[in-house]
Image 1 (cartoon, rainbow, N blue to C red):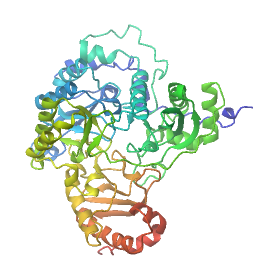
Image 2: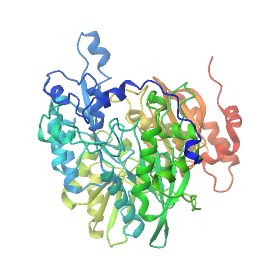
Image 3: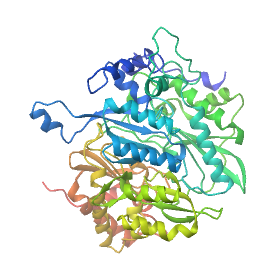
Image 4: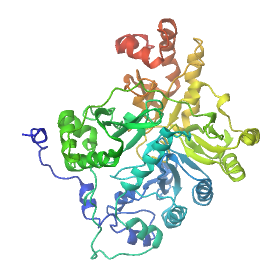
Length: 572
């Protein structure tokens, strides 16, 4: 008896409400056309779930909500639109289109994401067709940037002209294109403005099926030489193995995902587990096999248990490998040994290997806007208009500008500094290694601030490090306003996770290279006390660290009990 039949299927349970919405959606159309025609500010009747597949989230400005309620006014409803950019790659012309849209519709702001996409916040329903239609005409899309499908495919942002980097970029684009849903709903509704009758047959979805996947599905590609995307945090991770310029194949890891819920131990972060090695020409087949496994076996009744990580932990890796072998038509080989992961800092100037340069421009929290911290939007627009570099979004929320002539380097540096943009050499390693999610006021999941307190949190961390001569210590700091993990807080040296307004849980003990989860050290630390809580840990780290030991490695070595004894006593 083959192993795929040895584990019983999960007990049948009533599908969640979202499953019903998808089932009745006529291939993601729902009543979106009617909803657009309605003068109200939001979508209803399940369409608020369907718009996620079209790259949109419906929400409201949480800053003004209480005041407006007290005044008897309706919430200030708004939408977020996310552009899908495989590997973060854009053209200069595409970036300028997005910048124009930000000025016209998005409060003068763009947001770079930790998954190498670009987001607009503050859109209103009436403007959505104009925004999405313009994005489409510039050969971009928001389709499948959200929803229960394969999201934006990530890979190393470095535009290095060698076989490994060229292959990763090609693979990310290929997977992104091949794994899109077949539905024409996106173009009908947002681009063509065509109303397709519900009586007409919906497109078949040979990969996804009528109800698509149980939840979102994330894919990343990396090499051991550059794990800047935190590849093991993905549902499906492909690690490309090269011998010189020759791709020998990919190690496949499955089951990564960082979303969790406070006080619900049945939800947890997980890094992907190595399960197999595949040949160089099997990438798409392996991706479709893993997607099929999750489509057919994922939990469709409890959305908090519906990511691939829970399917794998319920069934076991042996069953997973057996099931994938059946789907691919041959026994899969074990994953191959590979070097230890490294993380490359792509900020600053770098050689591309083809006579050109690329520049990594730091963008704090990925927010491209003109404000008191710097005129990032004006600076990037001026550089991209004037020199036509190729923009690439990094998984650290920064912007890489590729294909620059060496002779233009001084002029570009001067242009950025003129607008108050701090360059890589102006920043400490902590500042370079910190990312933060959007949180308030845009995200409906946020329990407290993240993006808007990134700078004061970094200042607290740096002040605590400086007390022990560690200001130049390399440290990955991830800040989120809730436990859902969008800024990868559980996979770095230091995770700062929103617990309730003004309070954060502290996580330590991960590693900078992204191969080990951290653990919770403190449940609820007041914002103003974050630096004070960390200071004694930094002191003990400075006094007792081993050779070449990073802060996360130190925390992992000494353990939770030792670190808890170092924490300052909480006031009564």
